Image (cartoon, rainbow, N blue to C red):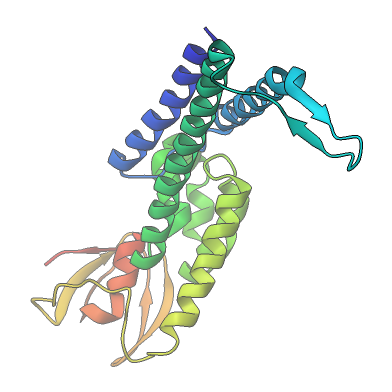
Length: 240
């Protein structure tokens, strides 16, 4: 019964990982589910210790503990130990798979230059509506810095720290090639200049042809390379 319950909990974790791969935005971190699986692993480890305790002896000369357990002499006990070890291994692999899927999503967001705050708000429309007015008054570069305080529901503290450090590491890596946008699209643009509409106030940006003040509902004919990142972040909409 315990093994079946452990299997169901770990399977739910894998199902969340598969669901994460198909969703457009990163879903909330399953804190309680992860903690439940960790508790199960610890309970299984204590069960292994309890089963092996009668077979432990202490060497009088060295004072070290030695196990006299022989699987051939105690097949039923060996079977119970095998089930516990396989259950612990399965739970750990499920946890690793779940966290790896989420880490890959965070890494992809960093490479694409997508704003983490917008991604999480798209997954939680009610929260996004409550904070929409505040977002309109912020600059694009400020949103990346201020997303920390509003992502606790969707990211664990460890994930948030991992994302920040990964972004910093990526910035250092890109700094070696300042004339190449490593996070840009791999496909070459069909048009050098495009028409865009401003969806949210983004302030003033500097382009090769001068400064542009991006105010909401205004339209511009600009070089695609100058506004590619703003399009990805949701500040601009491409019209052509």
